[in-house]
Amino acid sequence: MLDLVVRNVRLLERQEALDIGVHAGEIVALGLVPAGSGLKEIDGSGHVLLPPFVESHIHLDTVLTAGEPAWNESGTLFEGIGLWHKRKQALTEADVLARAERVLRMLMQQGVLHVRTQADISDPKLTALRALLTLRERVKPYMHVQVIAFPQDGIRACPDNEQRLEEALWLGADGVGAIPHLEMTREEGLASLEVCFRLAERYGSLVHVFCDEIDDGHSRFLEAVAHLAIRTGMRGRVTAAHASASAYYSEPYFQKVLGLLVQAGIHVVCCPLINSAMQGRFDSYPKGRGIARIRELWQAGVNVSIAHDDIRTPFYPFGTGNMLQACHMAAHLAHMTGRAEVAELVRMVTERAARTLQLEGFGVTVGNPASFVLLPGSDAMDLVRQQPACRYVVSRGRIVAETLPAEERMYAEFGEMVQRE
Image (tube, rainbow, N blue to C red; front, side, top):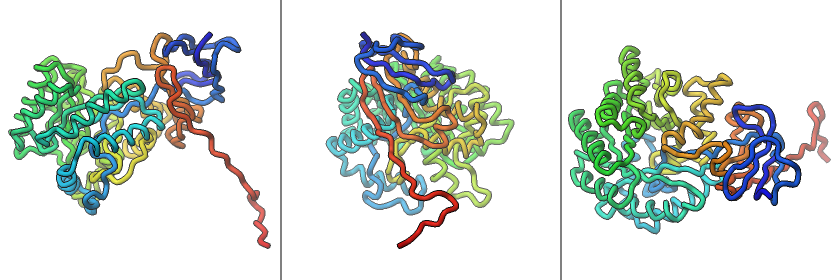
């Protein structure tokens, strides 16, 4: 007897309906499962069943702090950094834990079961990092969380951060980052990358760099990240987030960088919601689109994923945790509205994002953990267009979230006037 059977569902790459059989937390059947085989059975109603969503770049330490101590009225990165600098003076582990756990619950309800979060280590006590490492262990039965040590104030600009990065790795951080475009000079930015990669090599950790999140075609740290990945042999373990400046590169230079990224196996994480709102603030018209060239990167063979970055923070006041909202924005900004392109956008928050996180056993395949989401709709176009709530979220064979269908009622037909008494 199977623990769970989900009947009459469609996978993204297959239109014919099938059943999913689950036992002991694993997928054991994929096809036609005999009637009455499951202790619990769900009618999938012909809807789409996906592997769980993957949030590949978020700041769980800053979530739900929008308006504290003030609102970012200019909408710029620089005002956001200043506000966060003030807000983090009051950080406590309890504060970070409470807000981050609330957002993880929000993400789980939206079908996210894998999260890579940044933890700002520009604080002598490493308050945010310690809180997120604690949370990582607390949610482990249901969600997988990676914690990246992030030097918000820079590595060279804030020399103490080098020691804090190493302490963070010693405490158990999964990876280390840098923010080279905010160092004082290009030379200092390159030096900060050397520190980052040296620590990653020493501790065998992942690298996740905030790279060229600025509207400046002269910000060219993306090529340096690729070069270091090649030089150190860290192919496949290095991520460059944002890469907004790539939208301003000349075409010959961009093509050169594309080749380096493919050779180095760099993962690029794009954050279309926040970057479309925050970038371009200093541009005259025509304004830049504010995001990396997702379509061209993907077509060249770069592994691209899509992420939120922020949810209700000094940097970005919106966000619901729905990964399909980020896909919807990307479809517009990247001009990816073809059916095959939209399907690829959905993969950028599932399979491709899983590759960024180096996840094993990911996907709806016999033998893999029974983690998946069921969403109303028949294909990727439906999902991105409607951004539906998850009907069911299943983690390792256990239903962890459910959204009951809304009941809609119409009281008038088109062409008829509503009579008023």
